[in-house]
Image 1 (tube, rainbow, N blue to C red):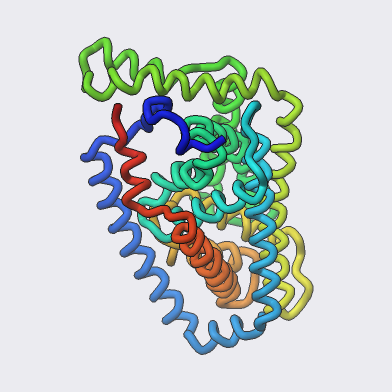
Image 2 (cartoon, helix red, strand yellow):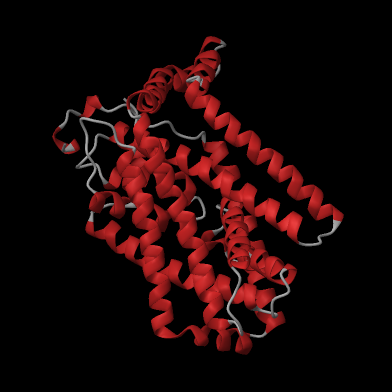
Amino acid sequence: MDLENQPSGGEPPIPQLVPHHITRLKIAAIVLTAIGVGLFAYFVYSIGYRELAGEVVKLGISGFAVLLLLYFLRLTVRASAWKLSVGEPYNLPIRDALTGVIIGEALSSVIPLGILVSGTAKAVAVRRRLPLVVGLSSVATENLFYSFITSLFLILGSLTLVRSFELEEGWVFTIDVLIAGLIGVMVFLVLLVVRQWHLASELCERLYQQGFARSVTGKWRMHIRLFENFIFSFYRQYPKRFLPICLFEIAYHSLGIAEVWYILSQIGDRVPYLTQAFLLESVSRLITIIFKLVPFVIGVDEAGAQFVARTLGMAAGIGVTIALLRKGRMLFWTSVGMLLIIKRGLSLKELSSVLHRRH
């Protein structure tokens, strides 16, 4: 369905963040990015850029091409999960879904506040296939599955790290708290969908009744309710899609483990254990989630990878080398995403207008 042929009044507007919240996020992004750049410079200096360059060269052009292919497969399975999250009568071809995912990941990686626009960018990228509200609700639905499987993945990684290696008591306590928090997230997500809690719309309604920011809450309360209903209706109508979507999300993380294992096999002195790749990938995923405001998670990704590599008894610089190589493939696919943005005629100005549209 072509969105451009629909009346402009047929689309609910998209909720926006309050300006002072945006300002705080910008400040946080700037501070975290500065810290990340400092960490990156520290690791390059402490390990030595010549040594790091030598490790990177070990992979070679053909090896880097394998990394690009593995990441393309990861994007493809994520796009497949999104495709299954679109309810009838709408249909999202895998090619359009893949384009949307690449664009969303590109913006999420390169812009300090890209996390705020990545989901919207996906929906806007497929606006000729899906109405905007359907695109956004399907993105949100897929993100629920992704969050559930990612939480499970991080729990397994945390348990493996704590139970298999000797860590300082402070780290053990921190990881145990993390595990408890992730279990709480998983339980909450299940109850949210099964019991169909309209938390966002009810909060908006309560704020409106109390006279708080009525100009905003009065406009968004019904639209948010509609948005939630789209997600909950998917749960009722398509229960048979749950397992395939979860399998696609599992494949996404499995390919990430395969990517780390391949890098280790090329730059290491011996065939790596699967556990090593699993722990490095799980920590990398956790850092990506926590420090999403930092472009390319620069510095913090290297710090996390080096911590795990040191814990596993690997050679100095292995963790940083892995982070650098993965950052290289991220730069490549971000460039592809930017080219797709230009080809699709999208712009940050357009995305911003979508986020701030009012009726």
